[in-house]
Length: 245
Image 1 (cartoon, rainbow, N blue to C red):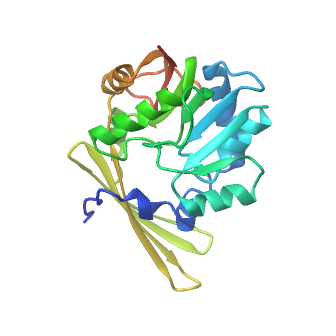
Image 2 (cartoon, rainbow, N blue to C red; image 1 turned 120 degrees about the vertical axis):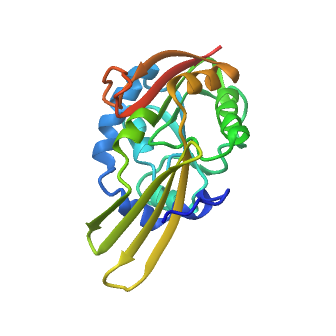
Protein backbone atom coordinates (compact mmCIF):
# COMPACT_ATOMS: atom_id res chain seq x y z
CA UNK A 1 0.00 0.00 0.00
CA UNK A 2 1.32 3.43 -0.92
CA UNK A 3 1.37 5.76 2.07
CA UNK A 4 0.83 9.52 1.66
CA UNK A 5 4.11 11.39 1.25
CA UNK A 6 5.06 13.83 3.99
CA UNK A 7 4.84 17.59 3.44
CA UNK A 8 8.61 17.86 2.81
CA UNK A 9 8.96 14.66 0.77
CA UNK A 10 11.14 16.33 -1.87
CA UNK A 11 14.01 16.75 0.64
CA UNK A 12 14.67 13.02 0.61
CA UNK A 13 13.53 11.98 -2.85
CA UNK A 14 16.13 13.42 -5.18
CA UNK A 15 19.44 11.68 -4.51
CA UNK A 16 21.77 9.50 -6.55
CA UNK A 17 19.31 6.53 -6.69
CA UNK A 18 16.74 8.87 -8.28
CA UNK A 19 19.07 9.30 -11.26
CA UNK A 20 19.34 5.54 -11.64
CA UNK A 21 15.55 5.28 -11.85
CA UNK A 22 15.54 7.72 -14.76
CA UNK A 23 18.75 6.69 -16.51
CA UNK A 24 16.97 6.94 -19.87
CA UNK A 25 16.48 10.67 -19.26
CA UNK A 26 20.01 11.42 -20.43
CA UNK A 27 21.81 14.20 -22.28
CA UNK A 28 20.65 12.87 -25.66
CA UNK A 29 17.01 13.16 -24.58
CA UNK A 30 17.76 16.56 -23.05
CA UNK A 31 19.17 17.88 -26.32
CA UNK A 32 16.10 16.76 -28.25
CA UNK A 33 13.68 18.28 -25.73
CA UNK A 34 15.56 21.57 -25.49
CA UNK A 35 15.59 21.98 -29.26
CA UNK A 36 11.81 22.27 -29.12
CA UNK A 37 11.77 24.38 -25.93
CA UNK A 38 14.16 26.94 -27.45
CA UNK A 39 11.70 27.39 -30.32
CA UNK A 40 8.71 27.63 -27.97
CA UNK A 41 10.50 30.26 -25.87
CA UNK A 42 11.59 32.25 -28.89
CA UNK A 43 15.09 32.17 -27.38
CA UNK A 44 18.19 33.34 -29.22
CA UNK A 45 21.87 32.64 -28.53
CA UNK A 46 23.15 34.85 -25.75
CA UNK A 47 19.81 35.07 -23.96
CA UNK A 48 19.73 34.51 -20.19
CA UNK A 49 17.66 31.50 -19.13
CA UNK A 50 16.78 29.94 -15.79
CA UNK A 51 16.17 26.21 -15.40
CA UNK A 52 14.18 25.90 -12.16
CA UNK A 53 14.34 22.37 -10.79
CA UNK A 54 17.30 21.50 -13.00
CA UNK A 55 18.29 18.25 -11.27
CA UNK A 56 21.56 16.88 -12.63
CA UNK A 57 21.68 19.50 -15.37
CA UNK A 58 20.92 17.65 -18.57
CA UNK A 59 18.71 20.47 -19.86
CA UNK A 60 21.14 23.12 -18.59
CA UNK A 61 23.92 21.58 -20.66
CA UNK A 62 21.63 21.45 -23.68
CA UNK A 63 20.70 25.14 -23.34
CA UNK A 64 24.41 26.00 -23.07
CA UNK A 65 25.00 24.01 -26.26
CA UNK A 66 22.46 26.31 -27.94
CA UNK A 67 24.51 29.33 -26.86
CA UNK A 68 22.31 30.38 -23.93
CA UNK A 69 23.59 31.97 -20.74
CA UNK A 70 21.89 29.47 -18.47
CA UNK A 71 21.66 29.10 -14.69
CA UNK A 72 20.34 25.95 -13.03
CA UNK A 73 18.56 25.96 -9.66
CA UNK A 74 17.75 22.92 -7.55
CA UNK A 75 17.44 22.06 -3.85
CA UNK A 76 19.20 18.68 -4.10
CA UNK A 77 22.90 18.98 -3.33
CA UNK A 78 23.44 15.43 -4.62
CA UNK A 79 21.92 16.16 -8.02
CA UNK A 80 23.78 19.46 -8.25
CA UNK A 81 27.03 17.64 -7.51
CA UNK A 82 26.35 15.42 -10.52
CA UNK A 83 25.58 18.50 -12.59
CA UNK A 84 28.79 20.30 -11.61
CA UNK A 85 31.06 17.38 -12.46
CA UNK A 86 29.43 17.15 -15.90
CA UNK A 87 29.97 20.75 -17.05
CA UNK A 88 31.01 24.30 -16.23
CA UNK A 89 27.56 25.92 -16.16
CA UNK A 90 26.58 27.84 -13.00
CA UNK A 91 24.25 26.23 -10.48
CA UNK A 92 22.48 27.53 -7.39
CA UNK A 93 21.24 25.37 -4.51
CA UNK A 94 17.95 26.93 -3.46
CA UNK A 95 14.25 26.41 -2.82
CA UNK A 96 12.27 27.43 -5.93
CA UNK A 97 9.75 29.22 -3.70
CA UNK A 98 12.43 31.70 -2.59
CA UNK A 99 15.02 32.24 -5.30
CA UNK A 100 18.21 34.08 -4.29
CA UNK A 101 18.17 35.94 -7.61
CA UNK A 102 17.54 39.57 -8.50
CA UNK A 103 14.31 40.82 -10.06
CA UNK A 104 14.07 40.89 -13.86
CA UNK A 105 17.34 38.99 -14.37
CA UNK A 106 16.35 36.48 -17.05
CA UNK A 107 14.88 36.58 -20.54
CA UNK A 108 13.43 33.08 -20.25
CA UNK A 109 12.66 30.42 -17.64
CA UNK A 110 11.68 26.77 -17.75
CA UNK A 111 10.22 24.15 -15.44
CA UNK A 112 10.77 20.76 -17.08
CA UNK A 113 10.14 17.08 -16.31
CA UNK A 114 7.42 17.73 -13.70
CA UNK A 115 9.43 20.08 -11.48
CA UNK A 116 6.19 21.62 -10.22
CA UNK A 117 3.17 20.63 -8.13
CA UNK A 118 5.17 19.42 -5.13
CA UNK A 119 3.75 21.82 -2.54
CA UNK A 120 0.38 22.95 -1.24
CA UNK A 121 -1.57 25.61 -3.15
CA UNK A 122 0.34 28.44 -1.47
CA UNK A 123 3.71 26.88 -2.23
CA UNK A 124 2.90 26.13 -5.86
CA UNK A 125 1.74 29.71 -6.34
CA UNK A 126 4.91 31.00 -4.66
CA UNK A 127 7.04 28.97 -7.06
CA UNK A 128 5.37 30.49 -10.12
CA UNK A 129 5.42 33.96 -8.57
CA UNK A 130 9.17 33.72 -8.03
CA UNK A 131 9.72 32.71 -11.65
CA UNK A 132 7.64 35.68 -12.74
CA UNK A 133 9.68 37.98 -10.48
CA UNK A 134 13.06 37.05 -11.94
CA UNK A 135 11.86 37.37 -15.55
CA UNK A 136 12.21 40.61 -17.50
CA UNK A 137 9.19 42.33 -19.08
CA UNK A 138 7.94 40.24 -21.99
CA UNK A 139 10.03 37.35 -20.74
CA UNK A 140 8.89 33.85 -21.73
CA UNK A 141 8.30 30.72 -19.69
CA UNK A 142 7.71 27.06 -20.57
CA UNK A 143 6.31 24.57 -18.06
CA UNK A 144 6.29 20.85 -18.82
CA UNK A 145 3.79 19.10 -16.57
CA UNK A 146 1.52 16.09 -16.13
CA UNK A 147 -1.72 15.85 -18.08
CA UNK A 148 -4.23 14.62 -15.45
CA UNK A 149 -6.48 12.90 -18.00
CA UNK A 150 -3.58 10.87 -19.35
CA UNK A 151 -2.24 10.07 -15.87
CA UNK A 152 -5.60 8.88 -14.58
CA UNK A 153 -6.22 6.74 -17.65
CA UNK A 154 -2.78 5.13 -17.75
CA UNK A 155 -1.82 4.81 -14.07
CA UNK A 156 -0.01 1.55 -13.32
CA UNK A 157 -0.52 0.70 -9.62
CA UNK A 158 2.68 -1.33 -9.32
CA UNK A 159 5.71 -1.94 -11.55
CA UNK A 160 9.17 -3.48 -11.31
CA UNK A 161 12.20 -2.90 -13.50
CA UNK A 162 15.91 -3.64 -13.43
CA UNK A 163 18.48 -0.96 -14.25
CA UNK A 164 22.03 -2.25 -14.07
CA UNK A 165 22.48 -3.72 -10.59
CA UNK A 166 19.35 -2.02 -9.25
CA UNK A 167 15.92 -3.54 -8.88
CA UNK A 168 13.34 -0.73 -8.80
CA UNK A 169 9.81 -1.21 -7.50
CA UNK A 170 7.28 1.59 -7.81
CA UNK A 171 3.72 1.76 -6.46
CA UNK A 172 1.28 4.52 -7.39
CA UNK A 173 -2.10 5.73 -6.23
CA UNK A 174 -4.35 8.74 -6.82
CA UNK A 175 -5.29 10.43 -3.55
CA UNK A 176 -6.88 13.83 -2.88
CA UNK A 177 -6.03 15.19 -6.33
CA UNK A 178 -2.41 14.09 -6.17
CA UNK A 179 -0.30 11.27 -7.61
CA UNK A 180 1.35 9.50 -4.67
CA UNK A 181 4.28 7.22 -5.50
CA UNK A 182 6.51 5.03 -3.37
CA UNK A 183 9.86 4.00 -4.84
CA UNK A 184 12.05 1.19 -3.48
CA UNK A 185 15.51 0.73 -5.03
CA UNK A 186 17.51 -2.36 -4.09
CA UNK A 187 21.20 -2.64 -4.91
CA UNK A 188 21.47 -6.34 -5.70
CA UNK A 189 25.26 -6.25 -5.44
CA UNK A 190 25.73 -4.11 -2.35
CA UNK A 191 22.64 -5.26 -0.50
CA UNK A 192 21.47 -1.71 0.27
CA UNK A 193 17.91 -0.45 -0.07
CA UNK A 194 16.77 3.11 -0.80
CA UNK A 195 13.18 4.16 -0.31
CA UNK A 196 11.37 7.43 -0.89
CA UNK A 197 7.93 8.92 -1.57
CA UNK A 198 6.81 11.38 -4.21
CA UNK A 199 3.60 13.45 -4.30
CA UNK A 200 2.56 15.69 -7.19
CA UNK A 201 -0.61 17.75 -7.45
CA UNK A 202 -2.65 17.20 -10.60
CA UNK A 203 -3.51 20.51 -12.26
CA UNK A 204 -5.78 20.43 -15.27
CA UNK A 205 -5.05 22.75 -18.15
CA UNK A 206 -7.63 25.37 -17.14
CA UNK A 207 -6.50 25.35 -13.50
CA UNK A 208 -2.83 25.70 -14.42
CA UNK A 209 -3.58 28.52 -16.86
CA UNK A 210 -5.54 30.35 -14.15
CA UNK A 211 -2.71 29.87 -11.69
CA UNK A 212 -0.23 31.31 -14.18
CA UNK A 213 -2.51 34.25 -14.95
CA UNK A 214 -2.86 34.96 -11.24
CA UNK A 215 0.87 35.62 -10.85
CA UNK A 216 1.27 37.67 -14.02
CA UNK A 217 1.71 35.27 -16.94
CA UNK A 218 -0.34 35.10 -20.14
CA UNK A 219 -0.42 31.67 -21.77
CA UNK A 220 0.38 31.85 -25.49
CA UNK A 221 0.53 28.21 -26.60
CA UNK A 222 -0.24 24.66 -25.48
CA UNK A 223 1.49 21.44 -26.52
CA UNK A 224 1.09 17.73 -25.81
CA UNK A 225 4.76 16.90 -25.23
CA UNK A 226 8.30 18.27 -25.55
CA UNK A 227 8.40 17.35 -29.22
CA UNK A 228 5.73 19.95 -29.97
CA UNK A 229 2.77 17.61 -30.49
CA UNK A 230 -0.60 19.38 -30.52
CA UNK A 231 -2.44 19.58 -27.21
CA UNK A 232 -5.46 17.37 -26.63
CA UNK A 233 -7.15 15.85 -23.59
CA UNK A 234 -5.45 12.57 -24.52
CA UNK A 235 -1.96 14.08 -24.75
CA UNK A 236 0.84 12.52 -22.73
CA UNK A 237 1.95 15.84 -21.23
CA UNK A 238 0.68 19.35 -20.57
CA UNK A 239 3.23 21.85 -21.89
CA UNK A 240 2.37 25.55 -21.69
CA UNK A 241 4.27 28.52 -23.09
CA UNK A 242 3.61 31.91 -21.49
CA UNK A 243 4.87 35.48 -21.41
CA UNK A 244 5.10 37.97 -18.55
CA UNK A 245 2.45 40.65 -18.55
